Amino acid sequence: MRYPVGKFVIPLTYTGEDIAQWTEILRTLPAKVRNAVAALNEDQLDTPYRTDGWTIRQVVHHIPDSHMNALIRFKWTLTEDNPTIKPYKEDQWALLSDYKMPVEPSLKLLEAIHIRMINIIEGLGPDELELSFIHPDTGQTIPLKRLIALYAWHSEHHLAHITETVKKF
Image 1 (spheres, rainbow, N blue to C red):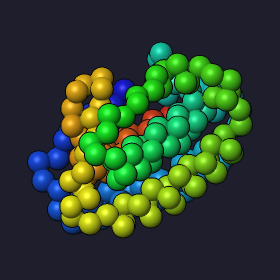
Image 2 (cartoon, rainbow, N blue to C red):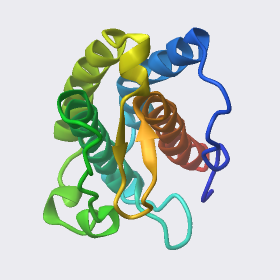
Image 3 (tube, one colour):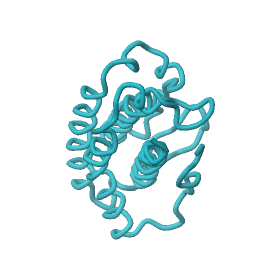
Image 4 (cartoon, rainbow, N blue to C red):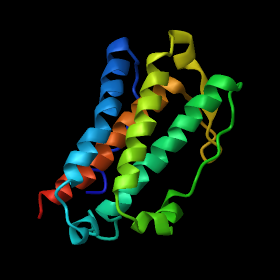
């Protein structure tokens, strides 16, 4: 359950079909997460997806936080020259009080973030897909096309954490 869809693998190529497929994953994620948790009670939401893993509630709150950071990375990259992004400590964010809240605000936030993210992705031309940022933790230069692939994977990764846990109820 640590990597239910496998670890992220950097694509060797980025075709228009790939970008469209990843964009569709991002477009449909909010509804899929909402549907996956719709019938869960509080105890089920507070069930970890694996030993020493986050609860379903924490995962639901994490996804929009992570994708909000991705949206900001898109914007920095589109408006600055190869910016160095600011990473965040997701494990520490998951311990903050807002990760104990009901999931509805985060479901709404995820919907809003994805509307904006999809709008930006669909407006990117081939040259913009090549624009990049620097991740200070790894020193890697990451092009926007890889960011799209990464967040499509991230979407499926955490959705699987939820759906595979729900199957156990």
